[in-house]
Image 1: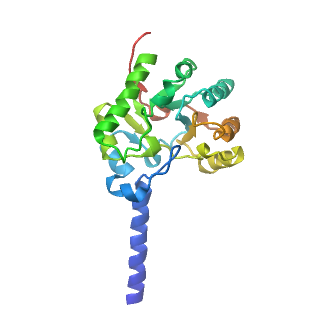
Image 2 (image 1 turned 45 degrees about the vertical axis):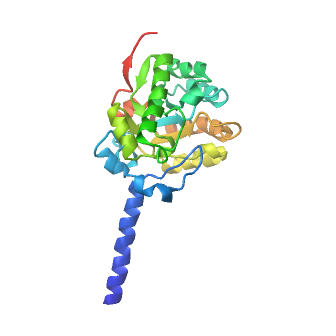
Image 3 (image 1 turned 180 degrees about the vertical axis):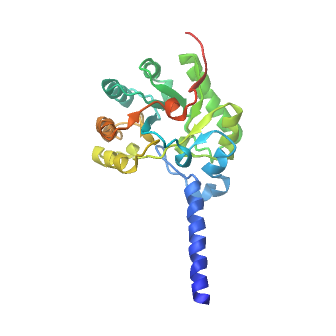
Length: 265
């Protein structure tokens, strides 16, 4: 009897631990791989953040329609962003670009083309710093510096923000709430930034996509690491359409406005 009680206790502990890991975000991508063990006590669960602030993660995405969103991080650049935009234009697909200020400032023409082509712009901060490693004030400054630049160039203030590396903690939750941002994560990440093949990227999307998915890809990052992503993008679009998915901008999936204010330039 004691043996079975011991086994039951182990199973219960394992289940609880698994759930905690599922809800705590340690996702990393694009620039480095911070050690999650060093930042565990600073993380809060995505579900916990969603109870207090606007945040969309895998557990609360709308799943009642066959709609998906394709998002692009870390651009714009002068190599991959034009190729991404050309493909989207060819297929008449509207996507969402989480732009990084330190890249955008060097490629303002690509930033303007994103909006001109009918896509949505979100804030991906200026420096792409790990929010576990900087203060709340530094997070605020990084977010607002990018916001100011986007406003100056485009006349809009984005309401969507994607934290670098997908890091969600109490600090970014407070900052996002203070400045009326909605935090946006993803549930399909083929890790296209690491130079993997188009087939591997496509197969990952095929395996993971479902109604309400937000797909994470990249439109910046440096040659040749996104070559597979560029090759995979048309195939991803064709697969989604074959499976009767509608590819929509983020604001259509979430049913919230993408910008707070717009001024005519």
